[in-house]
Amino acid sequence: MAKFELTGNSFIKSTLKNRWPQLAVFIVMLFGYIFAIMAGLVGTSVGSRNFSIVFVWIAWWAILILVAVPFFGRGWCAVCPIPLPGEWLQRGEVLAPTDKKPRWLNRRWPKVFRNIWLQNISFLLLALFSSVLLTTPNITGIVLAGMFFAAMGLSTVYERRSFCRYLCPVGGFIGLYSQTAPIELRIKDKQICAACKDKPCYNGSANGYGCPWDVFPGGLTKNS
Image (tube, rainbow, N blue to C red; front, side):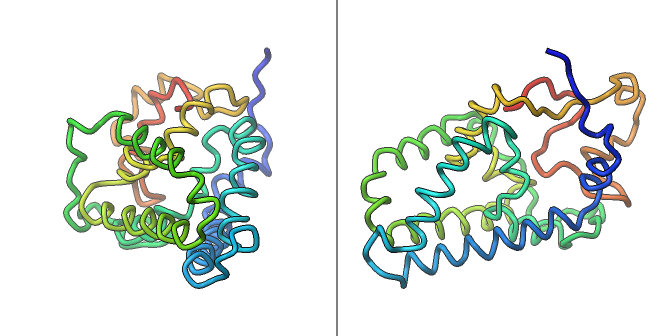
């Protein structure tokens, strides 16, 4: 199957390089996520009528499985609101590039947990208690708030998106099934990456912050 380079289109390329479109989507998603938490905690106790149940476990989950992952791979992770406030705290900035000074503790994630087991366990727990999540808005609100504050708390202790990489139950699911997605992020020329000394795509620079996923784009070979 022939490959088509999306960034060959000037509009797509300029949109991807601009920080504002992503921020706009971030704000909408963040508002929706917080609203879902509040609806679960203080809204109606009837699951089929509660916004958090209908929006998260029916509408969003269906879109994620049927559209987002099959067509866009890890595209959801680019606009997910869960790690957003923690990332802002971590960088000390919203849009502007951060300086080189570490924020908060900035520790490395423990080596023993640098695998997918914690993600698998968290996803298994969601699956085991899915009947409760689908019928009890309060539990859904607590779970959503728990992930939100866990991501924020971990960002003040560990570097970059540790929650997304090692704990998020949805992240592990997306990483597995995004292998079949037609869209992928790859480098154009390995020689350019090999000759680049500062690696601004990973370490950040005056033009932008480094990859929050702790991934070096020059070494990307799959979508997980």
